[in-house]
Image 1 (cartoon, protein in one colour):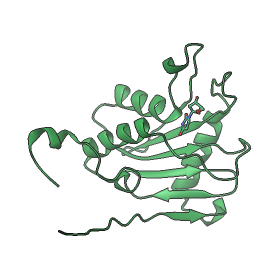
Image 2: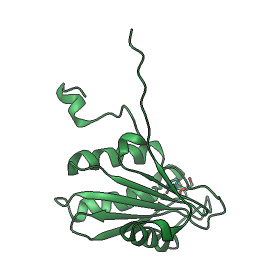
Image 3: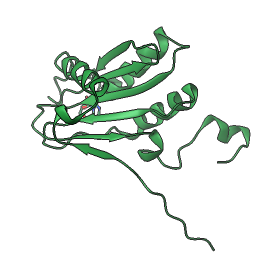
Length: 162
Ligand code: THU
């Protein structure tokens, strides 16, 4: 029997001014995208901004639907658009904003969005920086491993472990 632990590292910021400039820019784009979100049913708009290795920033927001499950979260809207338009350019960071939504803490991505982030982190071969922007604090994770430990990966189907 072996008892093991998994350590999750994350960084909290209270002020944008404390953050690296590249993160601030990405957050700004996610905040702008949030304002264009289509969320008539929940009233909860979310914005996302994806940074590609070539410096391009792709944005998206949540898109709801009268048939509720047909809607999509901001993260997947932005990630799928980025991958569909720039299939060979690694995705290296994503900022998700719920700034000004009435919650003080940042919203945490749902499980399906984490799984999608996992796929693109593996595809790019680089850790995905995940920036969660709330009204009163910003939390950063350096890799999807910290948000989705023991994730299902393509390599699990190929019999490789690890
Ligand atoms: N939502 C996102 O877009 N991203 C998240 O990380 C959390 C939830 C959306 C889905 C839905 O449109 C609304 O927020 C309420 O759940």
